Length: 295
Image 1 (cartoon, one colour):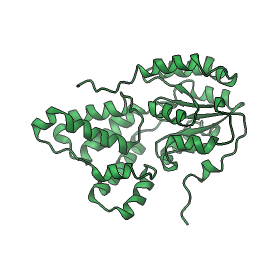
Image 2 (cartoon, helix red, strand yellow; image 1 turned 180 degrees about the horizontal axis):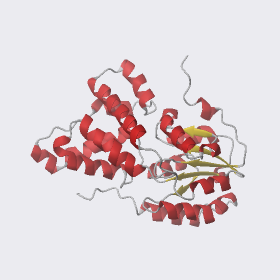
Image 3 (cartoon, helix red, strand yellow; image 1 turned 90 degrees about the vertical axis):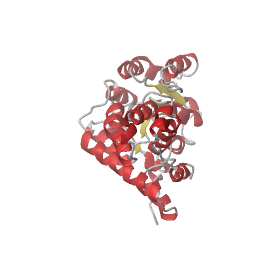
């Protein structure tokens, strides 16, 4: 019988009265720019034959993955969105470049299977197609490039200090859409894995599932907090009735300093919910638009 990828989350037992989930890329680590600009995007252009429109492909991929409300979404979802944005552009139509429609990738996205490589391999057993093989090849190439390029990048200043401060009062897990192997490597490399009871990546399901499985029946809602840098992180928190602390893109160090100096204490004293959280979220939402700059 195949091992349940969510077994570690399902077996998680609370040790404290408070719970904090922390995202990794762009939140704990300053890795979003290098991963997307040096790893994801060159492989999108290469594996999906977008060389004739590489400028526009790069622009679309950066918008989706870094500078919009979709920042931090799953790689397969982001890939389909990049294709959609390119299909709409008049510059692409004039060049008569064929943009993939990706129907099989979209069916995989809608399948309910965890959107990682293990899930794709499982899905491909019953759904064989050249498109899915190409998607798997692309995803593997992205991971290989990340393993080759992304290293020696420490957590943002304030991350380790904040986790140490929380460790006496709260259980913590990593909540991420990144492959688990990369997460474990990065968190161990920089000495913060010791604070995380579970390192949950894309193989364990969606972020909302990570939080739900780890917290169900173990904490009151006012004592569950998600720390993240993307609207998807906030959505995962809200799906579980949890609180959200935003790490503002472009202002990450200030966000972590504020978290350490004041937000942790407000959370532990149960004074975080309400006006304080609303103020932070309003500030966060202004930074991530839904409309591309070229529209």
